[in-house]
Length: 147
Image (cartoon, rainbow, N blue to C red):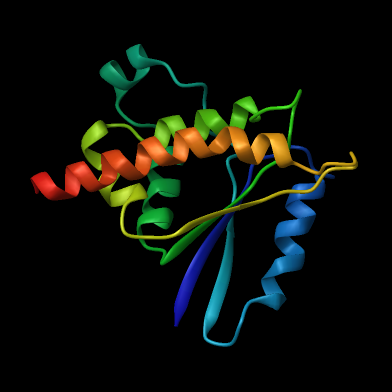
């Protein structure tokens, strides 16, 4: 069975994106499971915290779930025509330490989708994500080549 991990980038309880992710669960093809994860509880990234205390448990748990998945579905809101800060923060934490990038972001497809009440949906947020995801995929490939 193939397992996709879906993460909503909104913390709001009535989030359209969390609802979109939940609605997608029964729609995946047979032999595929869409599991839902949350970014709730991930603190703001702080290099001093990372250096003195290590990676927070909430981040370690999410990274482990991503690493155990066959694919990643990022369900992104659009805030002020861009990436939601809390969601980008979670991805930034998951890229730490740098040597974990191949384990977390390598070897699995990543897809984006989103919901919005606006006429263009989350088009600008999804476009903004592409540069971050391209860098992570390149770093994952480079890191995997070194190992």
